[in-house]
Length: 256
Image (cartoon, rainbow, N blue to C red; front, top):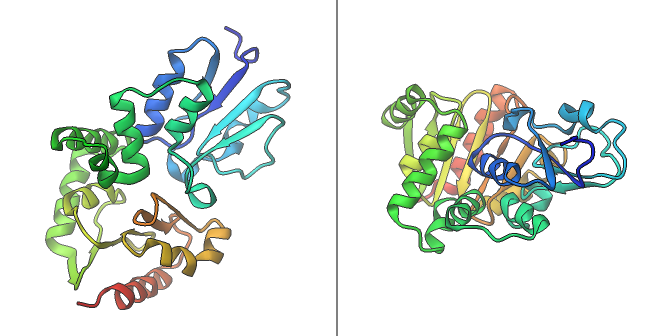
């Protein structure tokens, strides 16, 4: 099939379980074409597909969780559920809506995980086995190795601080998900390295307001609803700025 002759053309963003599930869904169809540059969250830019979209006409193009660092082409549709689109359904649900198809049980779990994490899966009646399986698969697709799983355990053992209902972990790995999964449930969780920070749980919306300018500057991103997550793009803050942010969050949420 000529990739330029499809009515629907999809450009994939950074890899996680949701993105891989979307890819599998699309590749099973004959009425759409998928382009996959094997991106990570850190380099999921529309410009990565400039060679694909240049000169295309009369084709509906769907960019899935891509940062628009270059002008979007004609007939471009943005599919996302982060930052200014955080009130949208998951990207998987949006793609299914474009195609006019229902989600099966596994796909529903993937969508719930991506938009609402473990509470989202619990809300749809997921079993512990289903939740553990989805979380394990998500970490694997994100590139979390067995070595990094162990580093997550060491991070918790050696660098976990408890300040009332706020948990703070200085991470030994750049992947924060194995730390989050091991510490759940929590009310407030802050995980950081010298290059990045992420806050999870209640109070996320207050931080969204606090970092409104940085979100506009694309230095900070957020998603997952009012109890979701907010954090910075890697290396968008200096080391001393991250230290100050950690202290500010500790002062804000670290009371007993």
